[in-house]
Image (cartoon, rainbow, N blue to C red; front, side, top):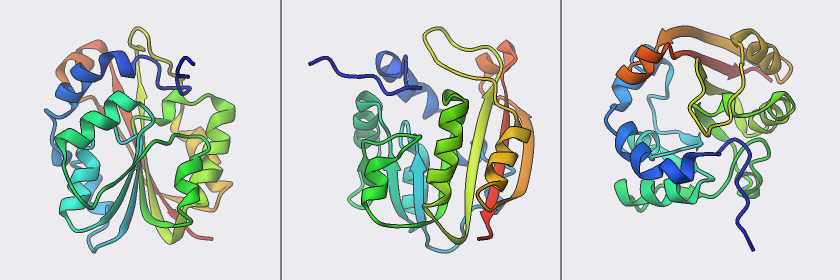
Length: 206
């Protein structure tokens, strides 16, 4: 039986070797220079959705957090496990909008990362995803979402997603915005192509 490609992950399996090398060039601190002050400072339960190369999951793991890393693309997930060998990171084959395997854990999280994933979901998927993610947050937990804007790479599936829409969806799920930043890409080729980002942080006030 032919493997089904998870909606939104088109192009990642084929480009995995290149992406694993490219994304690891940028440090966690470089990527989240202004947002990092809003990240957990004491050991917490972290969920990294669309964990890609595993760089972010590994950073949290080394800081003493309890980390679950969900990545649907086999080539990316297996590459991440090779790059960031850790007995404590829990790697899962899972994806938005449903997060079926994460939900099976029966756990909630103090902080959820959704980096460079949200724009791969269509409008209906984003509504389902926000509800699913909110249900996985502990009281007063925080959610980080970054959204890519600009030209879509060949072979990828992306949608134009505004900060305003994301904030509205979050509000419907008792998530209050704490942080809203727009910035140029720090990757030279993306910056030259006109790629920019929105970084958002919410807190659950249910």
